[in-house]
Image (cartoon, rainbow, N blue to C red; front, top):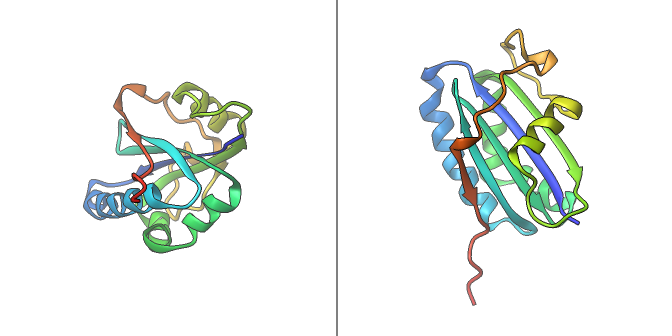
Amino acid sequence: MPFISVTRLRVRSVRFLPAFALHAVRTARQVRAAPGFRGGSILRDRDWTFWTLTAWDRVESMRGYMGAGAHRAAMPHLQHWCDEASVVHWDRDEEGLPSWPEADKRMRDSGRMSRVRHPSPQHDTLSYRPPRFGGASPLPPAAVKS
């Protein structure tokens, strides 16, 4: 039974996109090699909004990834760069990743807002526009070297 994590971040200005992109590449590299990472997907939505959907062996694996390396370095910047940020987690009864529509529904039903310094009017209510699901890219675990 995988532990699922979904994040949604909206970058508040184009001027923050280069630094955000650099950190995103670094954290994607880190997550692929993280112990307990089963796989995921990244969704590039409209209005500089970015989603991640990841599956883990257990919650401790995800927490280990969050608290180290590139992810830990990126986290403090998100409060300034983003005007919307939210997360939702759950244990999934089925193997594999849930669909993006399910991830969106979970976010709206039980997601929690992350702290941002310049929140949009939609931030506190999670009343964002429905995402466009066509911009998703797979995020597979790194190949294990033998």
